[in-house]
Image (cartoon, rainbow, N blue to C red):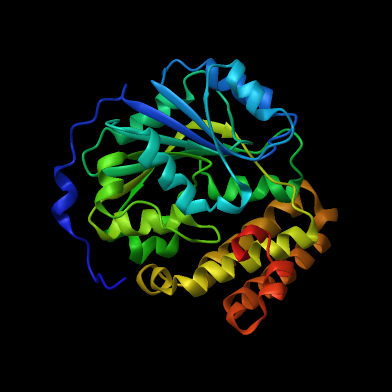
Length: 321
């Protein structure tokens, strides 16, 4: 990436038909909550004209249940899956002349019957190319997992663009595909999703949209239940993958700022939250922080390791095949 300032040429993208919506959902063995997910999707007041599950060889009956709900299922092999390429392939095959594509992950359960409609409201402004919604901790979320959602997903709306980098740094291009919508034309004009990333395809695309003069919107009233109770080793592996992503896409850090400032804010917030809610979890949180930092730094230097070692250290093992 060589752009040094935003390109205003995408500001002509103003005509959006909110009913021309496609929902794409990558899936692999979604588990016991899949039925709840599908029921919440089927009860939405906004009726997408197409919903597509992109299934990576599920063996838990997910495909059959999706078909029972009248959802189109597209099957791929697990080796084919990539966070960026799979989503872009779904757009290329199933979006057609739609104005908007909404992405959900299999474990992000829509919290209200009008969640999709509230999310789409964030795309009304001509300059906004993408919008994402609030993620509320699931009922079984640990205090540590709950805090991560409360820190990243605020209770008020906002819109961020190139001019916000000085204040918000890398959080300017923060966006999650667990519950997000894009104007298809804007997405395609910046080249769509990256073809081969270990994770972070949403941040990669959001950064390029902002560099092209577009804005990213957050809608706090559009919400899903979504959180992860990562084990200690899973936490390490996830941050190893984040380090790999930042190493391979260092232009994001160069344009939007380093992660250290945001990391310090998170630590302060987590300490204060746990001190009030669950002080007995503070030693665990401290150890998790050590694992995150270690995993992240190893990820930054992943190119020094063998392919086998990277596969062991990584959460997204299929990326290394």
